[in-house]
Image (cartoon, rainbow, N blue to C red; front, side, top):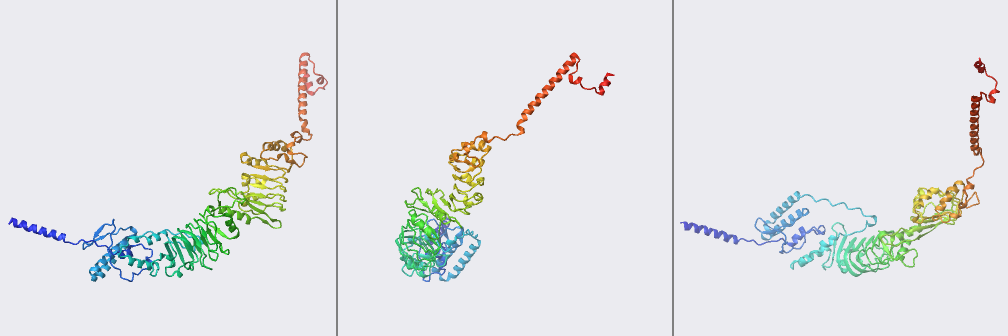
Length: 619
């Protein structure tokens, strides 16, 4: 009996093991087409919300090597999606949809139930997931970029990556689907897609020939186009694909030349060809583009800027073109209205024949613009004439350039006062041979006078330089030419601080002025001029207006004498009083001695009549 019982239990155990071994455990993966449509963050998903009209074959795909496996209620192993906080609902929907498709193959009658279950599961999951934070507000674009369109760089990586992983059975179906997404019409060469957020705006990636763009459909309806990574020898601007565009950006590629020109009366408003190693552009490439507002050609190998429509203000970016020539660029700056982006760090190579450069390095566009402003803002004085302005002494030190020095020459115009306004960065002002009587408050209150370090004011009628007191000019000047004027005094206390540091090489020229000389001039000014002889080189030629002498020849003994006065005899009077006092004391002492020894009164006392008190004393 015991043996029979043990045999029964052994038989049951063998049956359980056999049943467990016979249980199916084949892994099943979702349909790649379905997975791509539901979970792929494809930027074009909004452009094609409806499913593909043709039936998609069911294919098995290898699960992600790092994705853990989960079992559903029926024991089927399914790769668990790797989710982030921002994609929880997408991952849940993908899994539910894959389950629904698996069940639809085996049991068509259960499709509706499975679909409703997956939808409710996705809804519940979405409701419990915290919303993703809003992206930061996009900064407002400058006015010149309001018509420009640029596609995000990651769109190209999302759009064209991963093709090598497509299995052999999927190739024809996915190629056909992508051709429709890109707007192609059966040839499969279109490498462009519509931007997910900007209507009529397209982007193309990895272009090696223009047919990859021209093969796309509805090109005539495109408004904006951004082409990234185009590699061609010549890019033909006359191609019809550019005819209807308002914004064209071709960036981050490798292009040698831009040939031909845009169609006449093109609607193009924004053109950007940056970062392409372009070395040549057709001279009339944008000549017939009347509405062009922004032209970006930075980071190329260009030496010339093509002709533009001169009736329109254009914003131009030429930074990063280290072969750009200054001579034609300077002509453009003088003749056209162009706003340069980043002019301080946009450089050009100058022509060695130009005399306003002092080295062989590069010149910034900012200096060329300053040269133009120096000339165009030159003072024109009514009833007197125009001054002559030139830009001098540009120091060409790349990335550490000194300010250009604008020299303003208003000499020989008969001016009676200083010009009201000067060009920016005026370093030298020449007002010699005029009739100016006063410097006024220009050096104190007029900002266009604050950068002057050389003042040429010879042969005028200027009577005082006290107006320099407390100004920036007196702290920074290098030369003051004030010869042959009408200065009455030289304010040593003002010039003393300015000339204290002799290492700055400052010089003041005052020859020909006739000062009002006095004793103080001989005592103080004369010695001061001798001490400052190196700072005032022509001090020997400063003369006196009230004496036929030069200041340096004055004699203190003569100038410091005063006319006779009673106060000159005060010492004699004091001496006489002292002597009389001593004589009186001596006489009184003698009389007292005589009276004591002989009893005689002094002669004056004996001759004096008796007083009433004397009678009283005798009685």
